[in-house]
Amino acid sequence: MRLRFLGICSLLLVFMSCEKYGGGYIEGTVVEAETGLPYKNAVVHLVRYYHFTEDVDSVTTDNAGKYTIVFEKKRGYQYFVYAKPVEFYTDPSFYTETRIQLEEKNSVRDITMYPTGYLRIHLSKTSYSSNYVEISFTDVLYPSFFLPNHHFPFDSILPPYKIWAQRNIYFSWAQKEQGIPSPNVIMYQDTLFVNKDDTLDYYISFQ
Image (tube, rainbow, N blue to C red; front, side, top):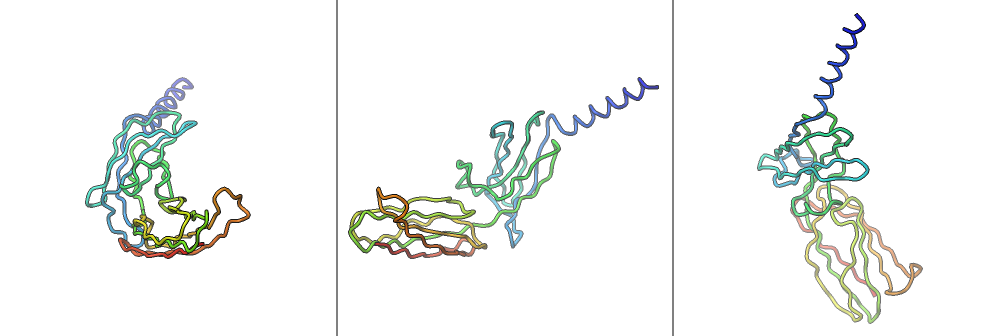
């Protein structure tokens, strides 16, 4: 009787293992936050983690926002799926805020992602100096970057940067002096909001 019980337990463990590992798939729909509309041409990315993150596969959603990834789920790894705008496929830091962890080898997971808009910066320098501007975002497609600089007064309109839309974006910029440590930094903070596919014009003037 004991051997029979152990045999049944072994079969259950094998069955449970088959449910979790081996050939499987993940499928679902990427939708826009707020509207729930399908998010076409989003890149859905599947990664696995064991000491470090490895790419498994990625696909682009169709016109209905749907995606399917077929993969081999291996023991010892944690699997996660997330989405990003197609323009930022190659940058690992640009993704939806929540990575979804996969427990079973066959999963249906819908992903919500904010739409995008554009930020167009009008930059004006009013003096001859070595000052320059650095911009930082919170939860945006561009974490931080430096703006172009000259040592003389100039006015410039920069190419639009893509940012998340339909939500508040916390934004800061700093005037810094080249080669001088942080005590000379002048910080400015703001909150940005842009509608889907619209362009927000933002004006920065510094010395």
